[in-house]
Amino acid sequence: MNAKEAKQSIVTFVEESTTIVGDGWEVSDGPGLGKCGLGLEQGGVQYVYAMVRAASADPKADVVAVERHWKDLGVTTERYQTGGEDPILGVRGRGGPVSSSDFRADPRGYTIDGSSQCIAGDFDKMSLEGQE
Image (tube, rainbow, N blue to C red; front, side, top):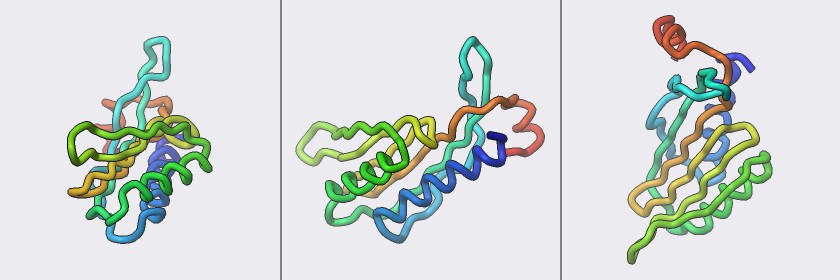
């Protein structure tokens, strides 16, 4: 996978994930270039992308729907919730088409974000060349 494909893959993943929950999403961050490791102290790059929208009336059902979609794509998922009287629900993912992903179903607003697979690349050089 090259940089252009990595960037497109995370945009596609996040935007397809938002359609599972409905309309009204806006870009919050990215797609932006980030650093990652390929192992044995070899650096690489990945793209990060996030979208936000207002919460719906049924966050639990939305978490289930996003988790099912991600599993269909080969993503390994883990549900979570925060403590307190009004917990925030969510699901994290790894693998498949992404390095990591997160759907946070906060009653104050939803966020879906993800990081592309790590690819070979020089972050500093790519940043200077405007490949963000």
